[in-house]
Image (cartoon, rainbow, N blue to C red; front, side, top):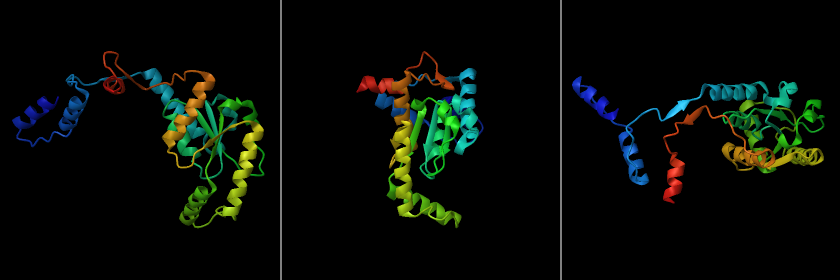
Length: 224
């Protein structure tokens, strides 16, 4: 394709800049492999693609405690105080094919009855160090201009975190310390728990490699 594009540009007097060529050549040198000169090394599986879309749709429909009656169908239910990162994590995990719901914990407020219908092994509580959560909330308070009394107060946040720990312990939900972790890292941690508890996840991948191609990760493993 690069050659054809270059020839076509030359034939019409159009400047041609090869952006991908140097990158591909670099991969070829590092991996010790030559490009196949073929495109479409990935093909879409419509069935898996629709499953992927349904997972994302589920996450959006069950964000921030919405539609609790649907939690029974969730692969994961994430609990946590305000600003611990429940929504970003839910959406990220949904792009991996998991149906994820999340619910905001409010100390003093009883958990929804619907949560008792969910396998506790699928329920995870996100925790963040108090100092970090104070910073997150104060940043939000500054951005919004006005928030509830005590929302960004350090002593109040310390108390909230301790209450959440008690809730998770009492209900035997899995606590996940998300302090300083990226969304991808938290997701990987939760998925490891799921794999240990329920076996291979077999997530739906909307883009499956064509069998004749070997994954780059496998090639790197061979070179290691």
